[in-house]
Image (cartoon, rainbow, N blue to C red; front, side):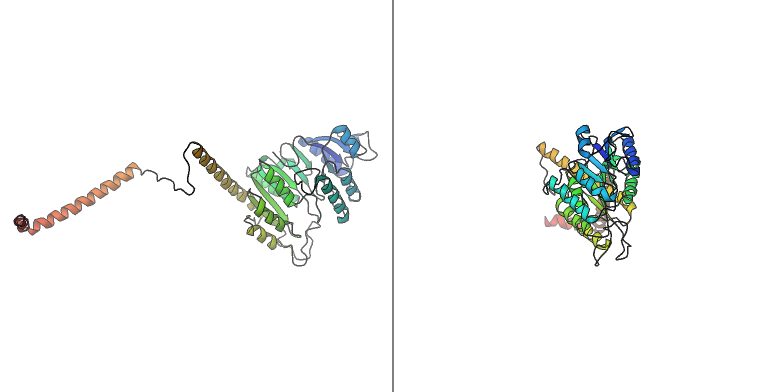
Length: 369
């Protein structure tokens, strides 16, 4: 299973005739994603990589039954592209969108989905994000498909290249992924950590979650509280920017420590207080995830065994001690032999003492009787 995209995703590429749109459309097609159309105003009726190009999203959806769109449109026009695609699932790769433009698009999408419908559509992912990939099924965005394999770990991250690094390390350790999701690091994004955690918690095949945050804002602190209250699956966290100086923006528009808040230390402390292990460096993540997965599977196995025993009419008391295993025959025989020797020594000692006392004691006992 997966979140947001799968083998049934039918994708539009907005900006497909531009440099980035054309390149990544070809990459997504090669991965196996069903790219059913592209959109570039004024280029309708043409083709790109064998994919029909339309003048508008509405025209493309009507012709292709697309249910998802990815946006490679320059920043001045990207917000309009989001509004146009708002009736589908949306992934906006474009960076440099003004916060005011993003805010309007965010509320447009949220209004269509409904604030109390966290699993519904439409959903905006990004802007300024690498997109997402469900290994072996579909990729929407710029994540490299060759580093991903199917498996039980859900990955959500603010950073793009950090996502690639950690996914590669998970794959190298045989820890495949359900979906890898880059949410972007701008101050306003369409899908935040809590949204992603909600989706992964509801996904039956996701057994553990890797969450990668960074300095700036309070999204990580909010995510820690949400995990503590609502997430039953094991989570491992990492916070980038641990050595960043205050007041210095690190990569993303939202990654800035201001007013003494938003530091890596604060975020790491919030996760630890919520019982979430925090990796100090990215390479620690696979080991932590493997350990938590093993614990989870052991608990599930024990729970299944307990239920099976109860269903057979043999109730298992909570906290009951396991029966002691029978002692090994050789060990038992050795102990018996040692005890026998000790008993013989004690008997011989008593007999010697009685002999030394002479027959008077024995005679005296006879007279008393």
